[in-house]
Length: 250
Image 1 (spheres, rainbow, N blue to C red):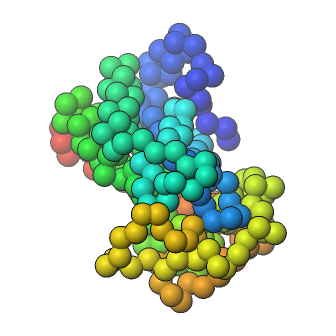
Image 2 (cartoon, rainbow, N blue to C red):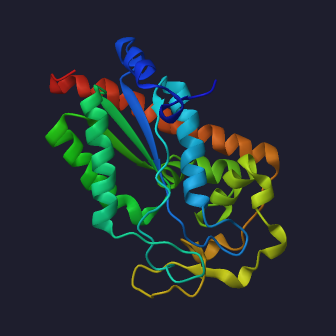
């Protein structure tokens, strides 16, 4: 099933969707930054958009155009990276949510593809609820997949920045963009909570030393991983919608 896309419809069609009971929008947000030598700069946006498309279709929700720019931090400065200030992203996303609420939608799901965006998206989501009554959830997909054991069970890895989890989803949707011949383990940097460096000395970031080299999983595993992550997000948001009934506003 294909998602309903806001930018492909007229305002008349949007009005009819709302009248028919479509009350939810899904907004993918990414950034432009290096993802190792083997994945494209737009990896975070590509993954967020891919997951958002699947989730929106499952929820019968309206899919909004992706926000491709985000708060690139410690990897800013590598060729092609693009950074917006946290306040700029917050204001942009809040303005989108504000407009959606004004149109009559009641719920929003933000599928986030980049950790640097999280604080800004949290503020925008909180404001959308407090100020506009738009019940909003922000999901960092890679964290959810890891916490639910999906990444380890299917890929045999924990995942990381430009690591096996992100590589698997790129392979699932646009395999030609995952350039195995350019990959090098010398790009691996192991994250440490006690270290801050600008820029980081590696563009593949592992959470633990045990993670090791990036795997390029077979196509069936890549598709299985993508499918289960989308299902996990959908399940979480459905429960969120049901829970909001307790506020008495829905």
